[in-house]
Amino acid sequence: MRPAAFLDRDGTIIEESGYLDRLDRLVFFPYSVDAIRALNRAGFAVVVVTNQAGIARGIVREVFVAEAHAHIAARVEAGGGRIDGFYYCPHYPTGTVAEFTRTCDCRKPRPGMLRQAAADLQLDLSRSFTVGDRWHDVGAGAAAGARGILVRTGLGAEEEKTPPPGVIPAAIVDDLAAAAAWILEHTRGTRA
Ligand SMILES: [Mg+2]
Ligand SMILES: [Zn+2]
Image (cartoon, rainbow, N blue to C red; front, side, top):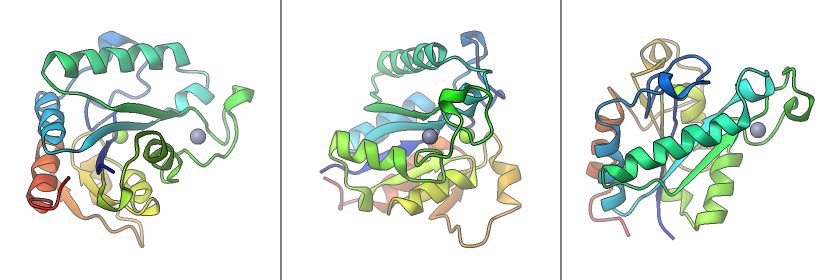
């Protein structure tokens, strides 16, 4: 079983832009492809896990999410990297689209997406990490038995000021590049 780096999408791999609903608003951070490639080479599965409540709220269409993820996958592959899986939660407890309006086990900080990916891809959660710009990213990691890193991009610098009780990050770093470096540094000699 491989360890994984579960990467949040908005504010972590790409710029936070509210509810992303058009490809021309999808902007990669300049280091994201390099960071993903470094994690690939160190033996980590790289899995994108993203809350997409905009689907339940009728703001974002599921076909667009698929299009955005195909675009991200292609961009990473063009740079010599690989994303092993994309998981998104389309739900929201108070949405407007009936089919997605409910509580669920996949909306971060719940661990459903991580557990599903672990089952699909044979991942060792105990050696895995989450990286994200929200405390719910760190919380999802902890709930799944992984370790969470908060990044200061996206909403992270604001989030850093208000840590919720009981949510303990493994590290708080500036961005995904620093998070990847931190993971490699702290798993040297122990990886698959
Ligand atoms: Mg985010
Ligand atoms: Zn969900």
